[in-house]
Image (cartoon, rainbow, N blue to C red; front, side, top):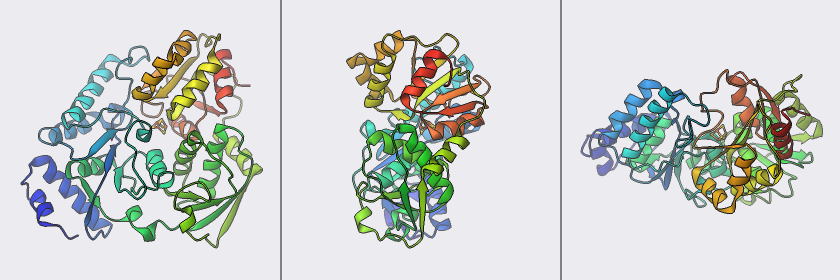
Length: 399
Ligand code: F3S
C-alpha cells in the first residue's frame, strides 16, 4: 500500500504510540486485502465495548491506546454490557459494572462520544450518500451501506479504533465501486405486514443468498424501523452488509438486475419463523424490544400498548435504546408510561452484549437478530410483532 509522507510519519511514530499502533493495524489490513492506499473517513463507529466480550486483556489494550490516542473524526460507540446509569435496576453484578466503567473511561479519554448505540444514525452520526466510513456493528454497517448509500466495510473493534486515530481506512472491499455490484436478484412475493416479518425476510434472504449482495424487487414500501430490523437480520443470517431494494434504497437505479434470480414467498417467511422460534414455549420470563435500538416512534408504540397495563410479575420487559432517544421519550411522557407499567429502559446496552447467560429461560422479541444471540445465551426464543411482545410481557405467556 502506498503511503503519503504524513502517513509514513504516523507509521514511524511521529504522532505517538496510539497512532503508530493504528497505522500498523491499517497497513497490515491494507496489505492483506490488496488496498492501494488509505482514504479519509467521515466517521467511525466502534464495536467491542462490552466488558463481557473484552475481558481484562481488551481493557488493557484500550488503556494502552488511551494514554496518547485521541480520535481525529466523529467516533461513536456500540452498546456496552450494561445501562451506564441504571445497571443495578437491570440486575448487573457490581464487579462487572466496575470493569465496564473502566472500559468506558478509556474510550472517554480517547475523545470518543459515549453514545453506546447500534443506531448511531438516529442520534447524529448520520453519513451522507457516498461518504466513506469505518463502522463496526453489523446492522449499522448494513444500514449505512444500503439505506444511506455510504461506504464501509464491516470493521473489527481494533481496526475501527485505528481508523478513528488516523482518520483514514484502507481503500478496499465495499469502498470500491466494483465490489458494490449486486450479484443475486431476489424477488419478494411475500406479504410484509408487521415489523418481525422484516426480520423473517432477512433470515430467508440471508439463508438463500448467502454471502451475496442482493438486488431486491417487488417491495412497494418500507419504513425506517422496518429497514433497520431487516439490515440486522440479513447480515446476521448470511448476506454481505449491502443490498439494494429497487425503488426504495439509494443507488438501486444505477445497478443492473443480476441474471440469477431467487424468489421469497410466504412459505419462506413461515419457514423463517419456524426456525427462529422455539417450539413448546408458552411461559415468557424476558421480553426485550429494541434490536437494533428503538427509535422514538417504536417507543411511542410501546407506551401506547402498555397504557393502563402492568408487566406480569416474574417477567422482565426491557426497552433497549440509546440514551439520547430515551431523553426524547422522557420529554414526551412515554418513559413514565412504560415505567409505570413495570417496563425497564435498557439504555447503552442490549440483549446480545449484556451478561445474560443463564439468567432467563424464554425470550419474546421483535428481532430475528436478537433471537440468534439470545440462543447463545441459552434462552428459548419467540419472535413476533410489537403487540405480541407487549402482550407476552403483560401475560407472561406467548400465545
Ligand atoms: Fe444492536 Fe445489540 Fe441488536 S447491537 S442490533 S441491539 S444485538
